[in-house]
Structures are given as C-alpha cells and as structure tokens.
Length: 164
Image (cartoon, rainbow, N blue to C red; front, side, top):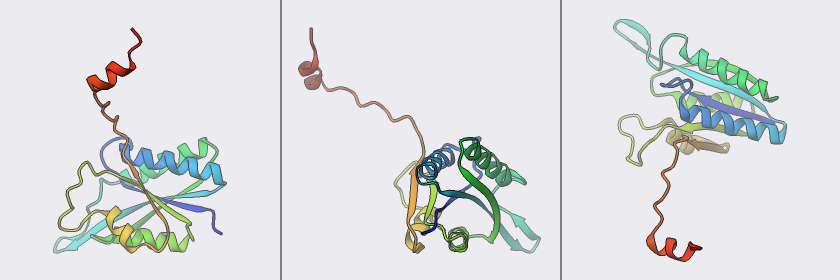
C-alpha cells in the first residue's frame, strides 16, 4: 500500500489562507502518524482566448510560494514532503488533482474547504465537490479554522451547574 498523501493547495488571500493551513496541519499529523510522504500540489489554471494564454488562478509566483512554505513547514516538523506545480485549463482543476494522485499512487487526497456557506456553488462548482464526485481514492476535506462561537449557556444549564 502506498504511503503517499497528496495535499492540494490554492493560493488565496492569507499567508497561506486558513483553509490551506488547516489542511496542511492535518496532512502533517496523518503523515507523521503513518510514516507517509506528502506531495503538496498547486494547480495553475489558464484561460486561452483572443489575447493569448492568461493565468487566472493567482498572481505570478503565488502558488509556488504557498507550496514552498507548506513543504518547508512539513519538513521542519520531520515529515517527508515535496512540492509540485501543475497546469490546466479553466474548470479542470479537480481532474488535474486526480491525475496527480493517480501518478503518485496517493492513498489519500487532502484539501481545505474555503466555503463559508452551504449555498450551492454556481457556474463551475467547487473543486472539493467535484473531487468528491470524481475520485476513486479517499478524499479528506478539512474545514477552515474559524474560531467557533461559544454557544451561550442557557439559564437552565447554568442553574444546574452552579456551586454557589
């Protein structure tokens, strides 16, 4: 059985964004616990049209910076890791991630969820949703790390737990 774990990351706002950091932390824990090797992959998305080929996923070098930062952090924590940058046409990120997972014989695909709502995605849909529907390998979607709001203690619970 393969010990490779494929961590797919995007280059959104933040350094890196909370959902990418959460996914990287979870992947690091899994790899440490199992002796796995992590392949951190970022997919550059390109549109081709009348004015040529244009990168639309992030600014020049941002994806490479995120991959380098995550690989460095994993290696500092004693995890075997490498980075990889791939390219695809607009709308084919999930398929490109799956191709990378197959080529590396990844036993698990990990990515962070940047979603803040349960409203359905329109037009192209989310990469996570597509991966879940297309994958033939296990996929772990790690939620972003927002500090959850503490539920207010109800008066009934407060009355039964006080030790006045």
